[in-house]
Length: 280
Image 1 (cartoon, rainbow, N blue to C red):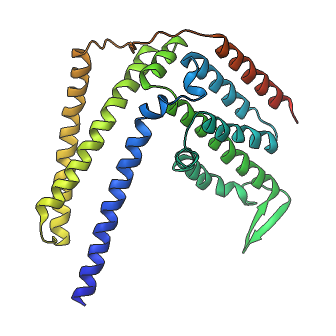
Image 2 (image 1 turned 90 degrees about the vertical axis):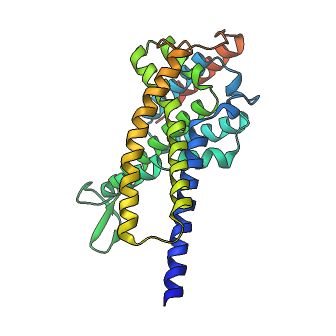
Image 3 (image 1 turned 120 degrees about the vertical axis):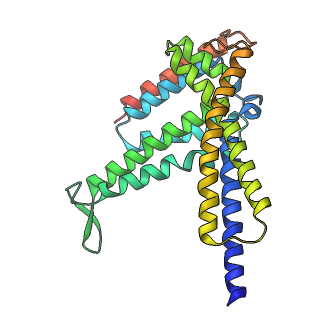
């Protein structure tokens, strides 16, 4: 019995460790896309302002899409652009289907049933009836969210963070909003490192397995310490940015210069968006 308990607790501990490391690795890769933004791909070669404008046009086309085939074509554009931008397709799909689309699917499930969306019954699950209007509304909702997330991921993976912030300022986004984004981007990475080191310190200092109430005390104490250290870290990050010349405006060594290919790309995207939104 004791051996079974030890094995069970060991598996649980390994599961927690793998989960934390996996989440931290995913967050690091999601936040920092400097390597993918430096690849010689299609979107990486475009002016960040033109790239941002084209993504906004595609988002508007997604919002005003009236049929499922149009929404499907807009989604197929995203993996195609990812391949042309030298992004690994699996790497891109994982980041577009985790968290937000799955969360939107959970939100859309109640809309499937007749008590939310009355209409012609398409299928039945016990006493619950799935209606055709509810099914259509749920597919539209999840599809729009998935396409929007895919476009946002494409923009973030193919554009350097400083260049993206500078492009936002070129479109008149308020300085305070851009400044908060810049600080958060630098702070999140340091905070993730702090969480990882804290967990490693707990594992290295605990030695033998703790009783459950001792474990709760250790976790509660570390949560308090992590909160205090994160507040101090926030001030240190902001102070370091000020010491390096940050004054609220994103600065880059490269100057934005539009080329003929940028205008051709923007014209093609505009034409495609207009064509798709007029389809019925």
